[in-house]
Amino acid sequence: MGKCPDCGEWNSLVEQVVENSAPDLHRPAPPIEDAAPVPLREIQLDTTARWNTGLSEFDRVLGGGIVPGSAVLLGGDPGIGKSTLLLQVGHALASAGRSVVYVTSEESLGQTRMRATRLRADQSDVVVMAQANLDVIMNQVRKRNPDVVIVDSIQMVYRPDLPSAPGSATQLRDAGTRLVWLAKQMGFALLLVGHVTKEGAIAGPKILEHVVDCVAYFEGDRYQTHRIVRAVKNRYGSTEELGIFEMTDAGLQPVRDPATLFLDGAAPRRQPGSAILAAAEGTRVLLVEVQALCVQSVFGAAKRKTTGVDAARVAMILAVVEKHARVVLGDQDVFVNIVGGVRVAEPAADLAIALAVVGAMQRRALPAGCAIFGELGLGGEVRAVSQSRQRIAEAQRVGLTRIVLPARTALDSGSESSLVRCGHLGEAIAQLRDL
Image (cartoon, rainbow, N blue to C red; front, side, top):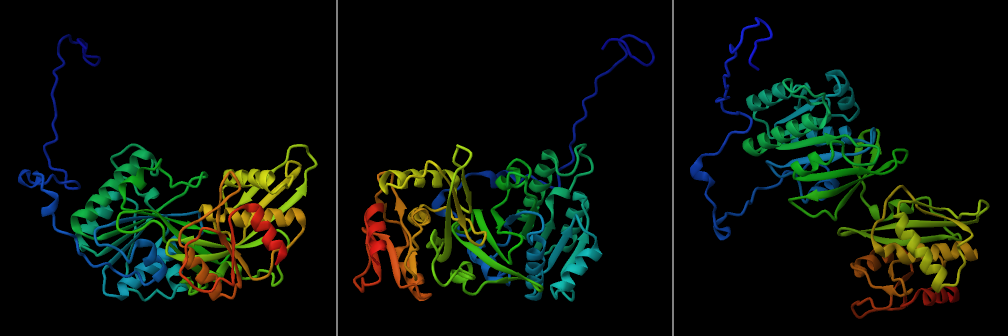
């Protein structure tokens, strides 16, 4: 611009380049001599002991406890119990001698005290701060140097000098990155609460999931008493484990015997369209009830509705049933439900779903005390699945006397009287009809 728009003079504008030479205290650069690469064999293993959270099921999900210097993101639907869980974890850690800072960006101090009173944690040594300003939060964390920092929730934390609103992608990326870097630098464990979008993903286009070390989701029907915590990312443990809790007046309590939790209320006498599935989740086995309902379609196009299981997988199973079991489903509305609000994603549920659908169509109930597991191929063959020994042992422990399983399942030599081996879907239907 040759002419100044204010005074009207020509060639009076002078360019001045301003460089920010002040160091970034949030992300300090390491010394140059420490940036040299190191051979893998010379790197020392990190043997830092984990901290127990006081909730055995949550420790299971995290891989044995909280790792100092790690960042954990907890997501879930509104009102499912995220704040309750983290306040209980903070109280347990503080009771064990750890210094805990609980940052509530959505509630007041009085609201947090009311929740703590309900959880019988109002006499805890947890330090609570109602603050959403990122700079204030980080300064207080530096002054107190705590062992654990809980932020509920990260969506409301903002940086004042950024023009975007709290919860935007820019604010989330900056707040999450700075807090995680500070946790790595100072060595405290960071627990974040993330909101969930309508699609069921943590808000902020997957930004936070890439920044943190562990991502855990709350599952379950909010109208039921049980809750499930499942890890979808964990740099310090397995993502196959899940924790099962029961929501009570005193907060979330770990379930002692989760195998039979989802069988409560099941009819003593099996009904047509009902089957018990021995599902494996990590190192534990859950016995869940699979229900199927077939109704004559009156609108021409048959409907396929599922709850707790993948709809595309059920559509494939229905095609296999219609082809190899000679059961006509083209004019039937088929509904498949996993009772209790639990979600099953493993292929071992295929055989139980297929037998439940066949039972619903033929109005024939499966034998009482029968547990089922096995994967179905497109040719109708029943394929072996993993953890067969654990599934059988857990089913027998709760009193189920017949186990329907793939024929090629390798087991130790022992009693086969309670096992119903089947290599094909038609064979499984015929054997169960004869029992």
